[in-house]
Length: 213
Image 1 (tube, rainbow, N blue to C red):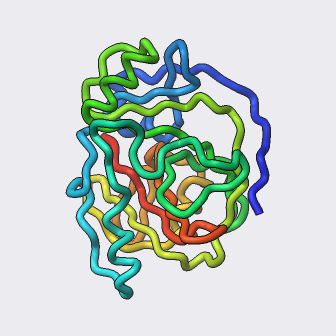
Image 2 (cartoon, rainbow, N blue to C red; image 1 turned 90 degrees about the horizontal axis):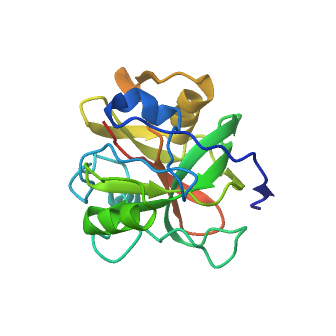
């Protein structure tokens, strides 16, 4: 079951030159929206190639979400039919308030790529979008989500933009630590500000880390 939790709104500015370390702090925002980020290489289906995984379903999901570069937010968008439930598909957001190794609060965001990012940044008067993506976070509420198993598969990304197989418990442990980076499966990993969750039913069944430099 998904539960909305009110949180205090904050307006934080992310300097474009801050790079990877600031992404973890979820620092972002200018004017019209709660947060915006404009420092990353252009995302796309080839930005994180699939890693070798046990099942066909997991292999397909390891490729990450579809990136709409023209018409609007990528994945399934950012306005679910129900404010308290995410329907099947891909949803971008930020992990907050990790509880154990499966449960956390999720700050749903709008992820724009390519020309759609430039357009969205202009609509929000957020300044130039220099690195092919833009994040809009106009809703300060959080969704309480939980994976069915700590061993639910995920795609982690090393510091060299190298994807590899991991589990949601390993990813959540990194975010729970409060550290900017950590080691998963012997590889250095940054706690990037945005992740993608895939839903097939009521609970997420895959986590995909979105690389940002």
